Length: 459
Picture 1: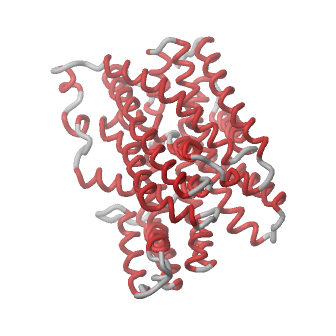
Picture 2: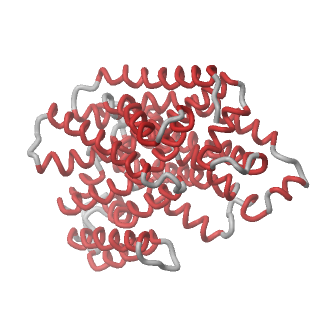
Picture 3: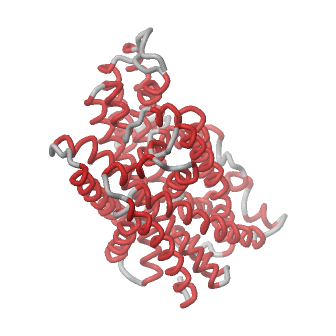
């Protein structure tokens, strides 16, 4: 992939402008709460920006185009399913979670089931979210390597530096401001690119000859059950993700939290379609393209240089902000729920320093895992992430939200531990005829039933 001076110039200007706005917003951050939650003053737009800025990362852009290059329209499920999850979050979860006035999901589970539940949730959620960060590191390293003509290790170092500049100083405040600006860039440039790709696709009957009806032209791919399994894993995983719930906790009020979730859904759902059109066009016209570079190659070769540069800048920002937002979620959980307790950190200044250090470490680990798995599918990491963090957390968290006090803490803890181990084993070592997420959820439900109590705290 060769870029002109105009491509590189507009790409650098776009990235620099958005990151400068995020760094400028960071000047207001003076405490750990300000870093992790933006002072609990976010309006609906800021909540939506934080959510969309994180979820529209490598999977929603580069990963969707990569999968569409292989299977066609079913690649849309990632952004479509994410949007459906945010609608459910706005309808049922946002208000009770925001009313709790907490900082992390493990804190919420600790209040309901004890400290052991919080510790398990911190470790499990962090591991699961890390896989999503890897999903954005993969294309980030690939694009930087291709554009700059450098090796993956140097590309990873540059990527970590950019992510650190984006998130390290301002935390949730930078993520919210940067997320809103980034989405504006992506919406305008990516949709123009998608329309261009759609117009360039072959018309009937050549279209049907190029793309057989299954799986290419059907949203259900090769079967409804497989598509529904992916959708359900997305919903479960997103509703258990610290980064998105952290945005809900940062809202100025429960009403703003719900409105932000709905706004994020409206932003996220359509974003995958342009990437799908681009992936299918590249499959028909440039099948020799490296799959992970399908989207950036199209933007460089089929758009005017100035627009292609802006679009490439938007893609770079989508990767940077996604890695940053996910790392922020992990860093907040580990620092607040584990390390601060182990190290007896109570001072706000020290907690802020600790949180920033953990966030930086998480970024580095995500890039390292990506380097060791450069040839893997981007969306594979996202779906694996959703399954791992959802299997043990989803049902106990939902019970804490809707049936507080109804599940005995001991059984909730056992459910979280055993179901997570089972999902991890069936994802990596063992095989089963159903998705590992469903195995984990079934085990979780069975272990929670003996702990159900007829009465509890009022919702």
